[in-house]
Image 1 (cartoon, rainbow, N blue to C red):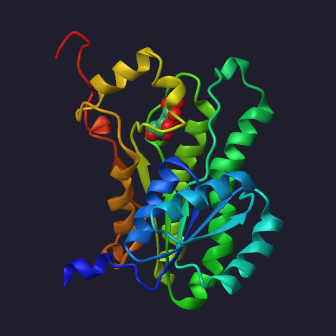
Image 2 (image 1 turned 180 degrees about the vertical axis):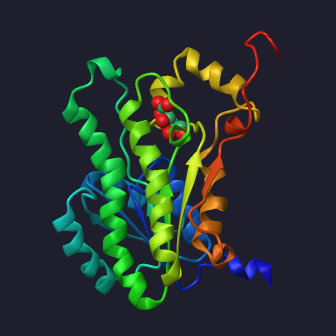
Length: 263
Ligand code: GCO
């Protein structure tokens, strides 16, 4: 039965930065589809708050303090997680930061910090966990890309460079690991109502109206809008899907947009 292809019962999923926003919505979707859930964050207090939130929704979650940019810590923690919880079948590289600074004013260290979390982090997590997936005969990797994997925007150069790089890293993972039955794909969220976009969405910020007009769906995305795509890319339903970025954007990338005065 096709619907059973989306069942994640017996699978274990790690969602990096799954303590809020899009990461939490995706993690919740994977758990509701049957997966055992693990989330990490660099901040223990965020993990504690998230654990309460998940349990309020009837979801049991395993939490670990882990910095995805620290290769030695990742190589030490992954075997521990896999012993304590179980082999990781699904990895969602969601943890990310953004700095909105014009290129002319941005310091190289600020640029590096964004690249480190948003691009090197997924590289480190994926290569460390994929070693086990190769031995076990397969697995799923989902990388959180962005509109900035395709489009530029004032002030987000480092983020765009990282998300553009993550799109190509995803394709190279597929190239190197499809032979091991590992499917590596990406999700490209459009503009979603989250903590991360609040600075450009609330308080009458002009970008809010711009996005509502620029998005054919005529609204900002809700984090839950991502759960279905994540379950698809984490499940047997996508066993022959590899190196693809699924844009969940209300149609932004499909259109050039329309003049502001046109309804
Ligand atoms: C920004 C936003 C974006 C979105 C998202 C779009 O400043 O433009 O924060 O980066 O969060 O990544 O896909």
